[in-house]
Length: 75
Image (cartoon, rainbow, N blue to C red; front, side, top):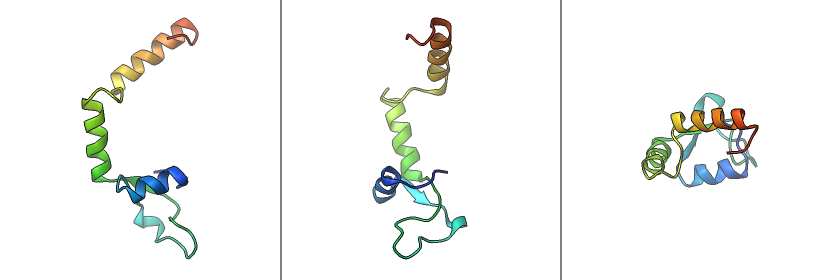
C-alpha cells in the first residue's frame, strides 16, 4: 500500500496500481483515495521485468546489501 503521489497516479492510470476500496473512492477534487496497491497487471509487469533481468530478485538484493555493509557502501 502506498500513499498516492504523482508517480502512483500515473501508475493507476497505466493500470499497474489500483485504489484500495477499503479507504473508499476518491473525494471530489482529489484524484485518488488514501491508498493504492499493486494490480494483477502490475504483478505481471514486475515478473516480466524480473525475468528480463531489469529488476533484482530478493536474493540478489540481499547479497548486494551484504556486500555494501562489508565494504562500507562501495559495490
